[in-house]
Image (cartoon, rainbow, N blue to C red; front, side, top):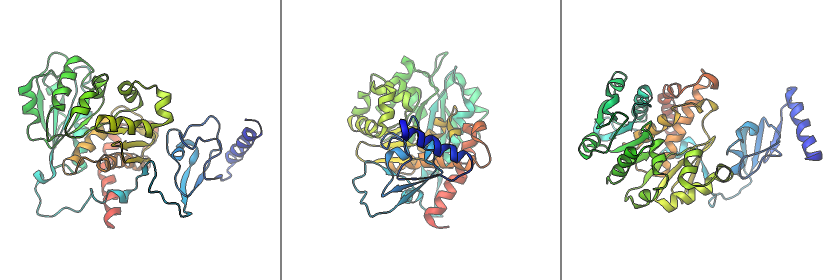
Length: 375
């Protein structure tokens, strides 16, 4: 306010005339913890002193931080609340493969979703294709019987399985579910299934499965609101991938509270419910309640229907051949975000779709892989 606000406005006005603005440590007016602001300097470059502050990458920060550089002054970051991911962090996951390999070496993964009102056949098939692009050996699209015809025509490189359904969507039927899930290494479930009692029963049964690496998204999460104890009881860790609204429904928190401290709230929920939380946002938070990673890849073009489905597909793909850890989940977020960054060079944010991102996943994986392995 007052003179400080006048200074901020003056600096921003000078920038509008083509001057370069450099902020030292943090743009004035930006909250260093939450990444929120009312009035702030819009920098072209921000030189973070010592380490990256949370507020430089969370929420609205990208709109004012510009290009972020860290000035090393010898600080020890071992006790950091979270770690900002870089390509080199994923060296344990995106490793060179032996030539003497078979598709079964890299897992059979599933993408389970859809209903009469949310057919989304291209989105589901794109999610499964994203799983293959992320390195899975085999991808299977699982849909309710009622939409089989709609999905079958759009699936080419993946197999299709069906779950018993009524005239709306999938219903709990142990025999058909067991057949659809047979042989899966990992599964992403919930996309477009509809938040109804039968969906809850299906999710509940899948959660009882042992030795299945599981990612729950979208309506799968909405069905668990009020029943999060099911996550706590599961022997194997499960990934949940909520956006802010879904996380609020799961936790009972209000939006402002979550936005003000996404890392802290995600950590608390993950620890209490024995799961890995991937909390979507401008920068994505991934945590198991102990370690936390932040991925700040991505663009505004990802704010479109189906982007979450693509992420779920990549998560399933990586889990086909990787351990279920926060790092693996963070790798999926990094890949999808980086694919969108690459896409923006050819397609502007306004006209990007989830299919656009899928089309760049192969290139993103390749560039990250080559960076890691110096090719």
